[in-house]
Image (tube, rainbow, N blue to C red; front, side, top):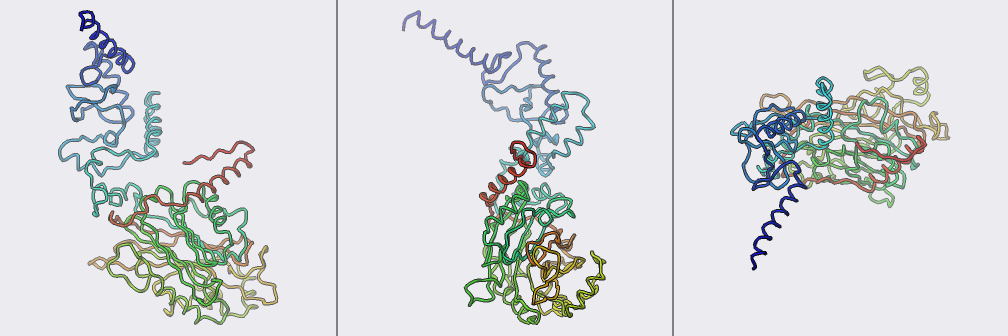
Length: 532
């Protein structure tokens, strides 16, 4: 190597480093590990204070230092220093949000603190927006926190999916409290005998009735004599619900169909859904009578949804009771979910059971008497039962004497009979058969008994908040019936077979596409589907 080469090579390297530094940090000179250092003490102190003020405005943390590792960082990260400690203000972490000092025992004690929600930020922002900088910082925080921010300290503990209730387990108590602060989940159950007809163009009265203030967390739709196009029916439900919920699972047997929609941020906390079915007429090629069921766990609580179509005709009460007993003892669920003592009675194996469908129980009263009662009665009925001819209802008698549906309850019926109407009208059957109006479409519910040593219930009782019908839908000879329930959730173990975000993508995409198209037609503009 010549003397000229030995002099020019270091200079070229120095120029190259200088150019890289100028590109990454135009106002700084990089040190050996790539952390920018101020050129002078006075100017550096001003810049540190400015960055510190901005960081604290975004995260609402005090200006006290946080001890962190002194390992070298990658080139290009600008971190202010104070008293020899590096403050990580370049990103927003859950630790910053809660002013948590990562040191000693305080690190573990603060693992359960909740993250800052959008609503909290908005409420606090309305009272503290004293400056434009603070307002912009809060907007930036809202935009960044689409999902909960995960501190690396939690990730390093590596106690996810270890089969126990850990501080950071996916189904553990902290995650449950974060997702459901009250530990209460709302469940919508709907049943409808569609009479083999296509659904109406407008399903809001059934899927999103005006009596609901918020869309429930779980929605289960059971149909009997369903339309032949199952995909079309599921897309109609998805289109009505919008992007907030996804089709978690669906199953069918002949003309009986069950679709379960779940709030889309909850699918990560659900187990793999299981289903089973039974035809009570095994000799028939076209299965119209029987039941389908689907069960799964949400956190540590198990749910079973059953929709059934039982034997018809006024006098066949014993046959309907026999159908129920066959279904209860033949549905093999659960198969993979953890359960200590599996019972032959499927309704004993889940925490909450919802049984809906066209159960075909009738009013044991002559038609003319029922019509006379209807002509003199205004609905909704008073909230007590029996009322009018409800004490002649066959299902009420079955429930009271324990012949079937042991342990099940039904909320008070305040709506008119849901069977049988002339399709397209609000008139009861005027055909030659002159069928008597009846409450054939029902929703029953049950909670598995679990008590502590003190004798008190382990969890609050299952509540029915609303129980109603949908008289506005006239495409079928039956009216849809729906109910909303409130249940209590428990934390679970991560050893259950997780669904891992399972949902029906095809139904979701097509439903949202149609929703956007309708919105475009209504607004007369371009179709824009905004997913919140």
